[in-house]
Length: 218
Length: 242
Image (cartoon, rainbow over all chains, first blue to last red; front, side, top):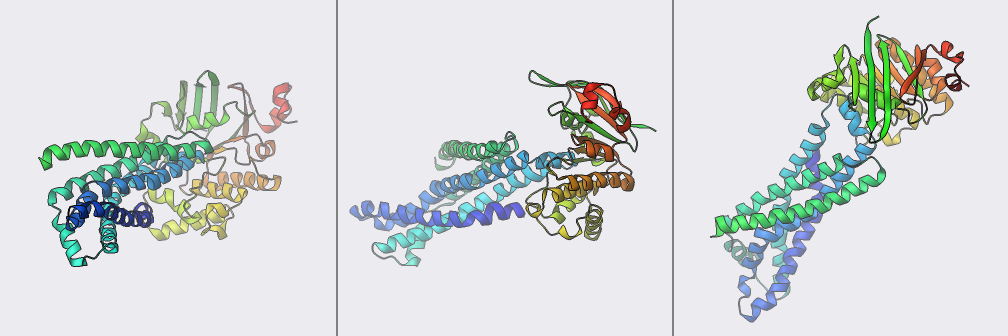
């Protein structure tokens, strides 16, 4: 629960803000083009599909890689430097179970939830964006947005967020746990946790899109 | 008296650096053995080998007659429950309060569930180390001496049979060093522990040692009581006492 609080609650603010701006900007950018074809009513559906399928999960995961993986890497790295992990181990406790498993489980649980929150905020951002240039009632907007979605848009996206959560938790813990002993190593552990987790997320996303395209959308 | 810790022919290298060349030592039940030596001579590596944190390249390490080098993780964990290790820095869990630090080994290692008993034992060990008022403080609020005491409290809370002290008085003023040394003696009396104390501090050695072992260049060069070694004709040995 404590790790869920650190991973989830403390990251929710930045994820909500980013999600809102994402939906807002996506709407403002796509609206003029679709207006040229008289297809502005498709904007909510376009935004919802883009956000749910791809942008929401990936951007949320990248933000969490920056905030959570680096935090875990730095925390465990500094615990290693200050011999706290050694102290835990030599006391007969299992640091792997207490420090690693709890953090990975928290990421597995909270990243999908944060993604859902970010997606919801992106919908609201899209609604704000569409009402800046013209007007659309909230009922019409959300009916169009949800009408554009199908179940096959939702579940592959949710499934991949669990993989993203695992990558963020695992990479952060691995880098922190295996950092060298020295204050510089703490920074390096945090830094490389972000880089490796971000690359991992992008690679997993590319693979997930390939699998989803061939299995679900065909 | 039975042997609690026995090291025979222990060798350990880090890359090309041969730290332990041939360490042989025996610690009997209830004894306080102080290991003295210059920096980088392998004193800390020796006790980390005893605790199973570092695997030696060769030699035998027996604790309670069990060979540490043959132990798997589960056996090591079971052994470590009977062993306390005081780190030089105290190694307090800095995201937890003093109370949580003390409760951690009780909940996680001894699997205690009774919160009243956990609280009672925490209060008892804090009183034993003279830190009664610090139970709700964070480690960052404690001074160097208090951190050492707190580290000691967290170690003795599980009532270990063996205590391994890694430079318990380093970085402390003379008065606090004497207090910590006296505390080590009182822990031996109260908890009937067998201890190895790594130190450079000869004042600490004088107060705490039943026997002193001097390590130099990866081997034990002297073994005896403080009085015996203080009057040794060996220049290297006597250099530690002058």
